[in-house]
Image 1 (cartoon, rainbow, N blue to C red):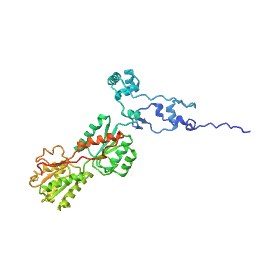
Image 2: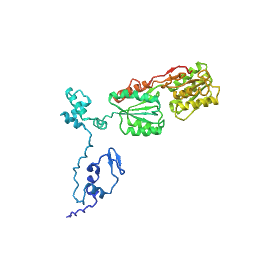
Image 3: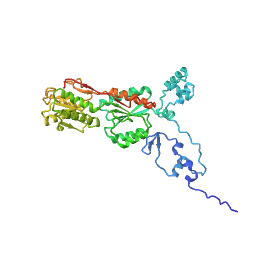
Image 4: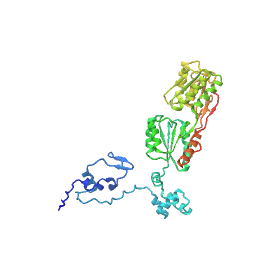
Amino acid sequence: MTTKEPSKRRTDIGQRYPKRVLKSPLQSLGVGPAESAQGTLFQGFHVLPQLPDSAILNVLLPGPFSGKPLSTALPRRPRASGRTTLADVARAASVSPITASRALRGERAVAPDLVERVRQAAQTLGYVPDPAARALASQRSTLVPVLVPLLSNALFVDVLEAVHRGLAPHGYQILIGVTHYDPQEEEKLLTSYLAMRPAGLLLTGFDRTDEARQRLAASGVPCVHLMETTRAPDVYCVGFSQQDAGERMVQHLLDRGHRRIAFAAAQLDPRTLQRAEGYRRCLRAAGCYDAGLELLSSEASSVRLGGELLAQLLDKHPDIDAIFFCNDDLAQGALLAAPRLGIRVPDQVAVAGFNDLAGSAEMLPSLTTVRTPRQAIGEESARMLLALMRGETPARNCMDLGFELTVREST
């Protein structure tokens, strides 16, 4: 016969009440967002600094610990004051929350009079839908991050405006990430945005780290690349050939009789280097390429820098008869600096730019440039991404929208 020995009393609170002690104390305390020198904000909650078990119990159960099991009925966290919810709208319209939700989404299953009543209630109460809650409930995100190198470049502002016009009517919200032409910075932004489970992504170019490529592929998020083209069958992109555009401008200068053609560039991002390759290819074919006539600066492109590059080129190579600047702001700076340097454009030196930015047509003389289809790139990339987010397959995975040589007085 065996006798059952009495169990030893456990004094370890974590063993005696494991399910209760391990629950977050925030659920019982109802702690919401707060500003404090202690703790950190995490997903909308104010997280307390780490405390010993006894201190946590004293917070949960003021006074001496009684030894009785903790209640499993945790108090509900109070709602943030002043925020109108969908339930408030539903009560005001005398409908159920699900009907209110369908009415605000414009679903046809809801009668028109109910839709109007719910919308009036929402307007009166100042209800603003919570996109995070909506995405959680519908399991469908409305966020579309767009990563661009700079916002100081008007080219990307034009692209962003076109993307917004294409996506906003369909209920999507764009998030703008600025990479500063830094693949490492882009990788950090991609990691952050992918954690939000976005509906889709728009990325500038193809220059990124291997880690970023792997994360992008593993995420399964629909993605369209901007400003460049590729022959890869599994990549979606909208842009044009930067190399062909650079070659076309140099051919124009050759056709005008110029032979000592310099190339001045800044920033040296992948698209600038592709234009430089077009410059080299054209001059090599013509038998007049001189590597010494290339002036490449890692500085950001600007009007000021354009004037400085013009002065440097003329000082080193006074016999040049044309300069192809990789961007219009550099070319505009050169046109402004030319009179101060005693240079007549285009009689002594022809000047050409790229992108046809604002003000180029108004320069004296007006600037010859390559007009890039940035508005169309934004519109078509939004259209392609919409198809991918719907699970459709676009007719073409890569759209080459071309470019336009715009000849003016400077050449």
